[in-house]
Length: 123
Image (cartoon, rainbow, N blue to C red; front, side, top):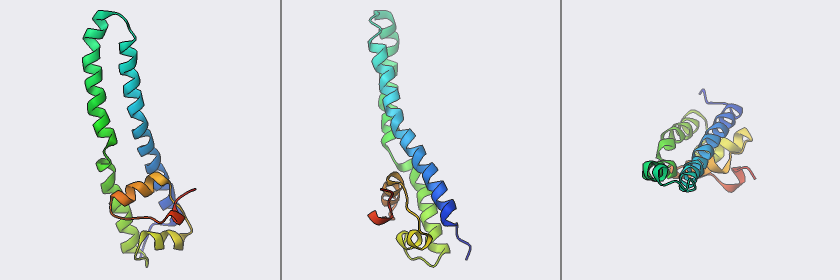
């Protein structure tokens, strides 16, 4: 059976966890744009911009908070390591490869239906 190596798995999930982290941090950037618009203290720019910027903040915050865009790839990775290795769980695969995963990946994995034991999560 050809299964992804532990080092490749870890490299990919670290990048994916970093992407999710950056995604979550975007919420603050959208909020900061709204806040700076409020601070303009000039009525025309506030009228012209505030509703649009605040609306974008609300819409994007809903998108950012949702994990759905990430879960299909997480499911694919976890299904791959279970189907292509001798492991019957993700934890067995991680133990066999001697690797751990970032907390954000573990959270996404749990949401996708693949729990990861705390002993396999980076400290």
